[in-house]
Image (tube, rainbow, N blue to C red; front, side, top):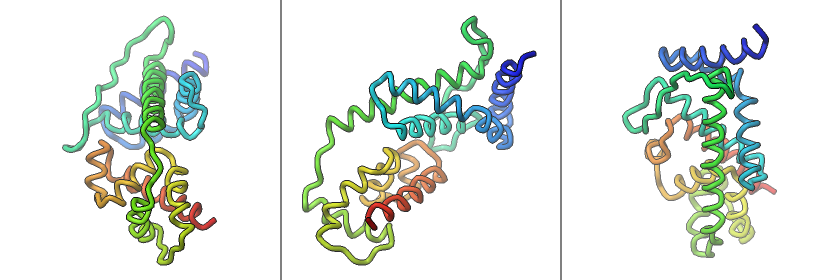
Length: 209
């Protein structure tokens, strides 16, 4: 058996074992084995869709991982996902690898559509909106002082975040708590917490310039 066959069979096996047992050891092994495949597939599809930003591939992979995370089952507030069912094909001998490639392409298309939609509908913040956002944002990033330049940098700083990070920050600013954000985004609270922490760290860096 070739090394590729061994890798491919392992992807299928780990998917099935994770789905059946929810043993995180299988998930960790699966992610280590497939992370490059997921990212490269998403990146290639996004370029085909006209999205050149490498960060978009990270967003697509995050959606794939969230889908895979829910294969063994979902919490009451989460949307269920279709279970993995191995199906061999002539194009790809391993169903696990084929499944992850398909899922990466689909989520990459989703990210590309959202980015195009966001670009069409995004409008600059008004001065009133910027002022209304500044105070809670200062609380989030641990700042107690502000000047006029903060208002000018605010929109750029938030727009400098990855899509899902920016979404979480805007939802936090409008008063949603972590549980509500998780429910609205169909993710677990741990995902929201990670996005929040990374976004705040990035905002602190951007606003400190």
